[in-house]
Length: 296
Image 1: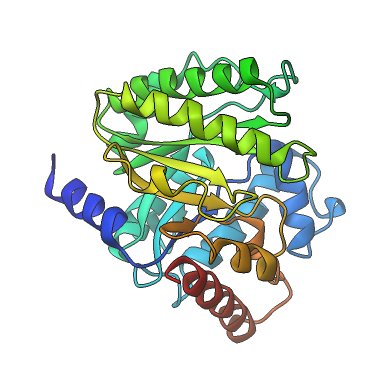
Image 2: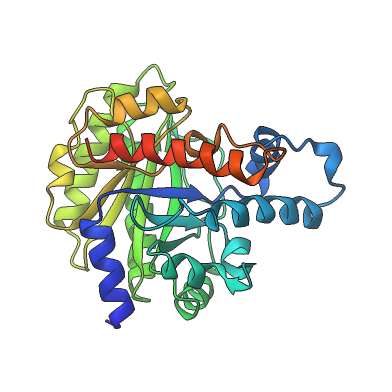
């Protein structure tokens, strides 16, 4: 393990803060831009759209408040990893600020079967992991979705996540395993419990270095406490899952040892039209609020 990786590991393991999710990709980019105050009439193709979202992310990661004191990590979209901010490669800039870089590596979701959405096949995963390592990235994130408390579906999701995690760990990267439970599901609590059972079994059989888990905030507070304490788990992070920031923070604070990895809840008050002082104040306020819920 390199010195940088050992330092990154310590920051993720012990850092008092949260992980920012800046990894909206193709399908979710127009929605993210709209929230930022940029309508679809502002771009005419994907290149222009990705240019606008990169400008937004650059503004975030170069803001004075975006540093390792409260933001211990950031999950990047592939184009963001390949891009620059302030004249530096984004992963390099982040780590100079004490923020550990992660990369979203999944290729999106399959259509629902057995109450879940598995990840699409990812034949280029090994090549992408090699590029990430070369750029100084510490870990990866991949998302699938649980909509119903279907035992076969939940088992299939966890098996697929851990199979991909093994490929990723083979490159020396730390995988964030994200089987998101849909918080709007009528079977949310049952799905949480099935997921806990399957994750525990998979972790007990995992013989690699510790992994990370990114989970929906459970319907029952502290349901995932045993995962937080599991020796094979480096950190359990929570997604906001559609909760607005005040509610996401209130729910998160009820769960010992879980820290935030919020996307929309982090960015919801930021607007393209703000001047730098307004932008930095708004982002700083959001960071303070999410940080407080993460260390509660």
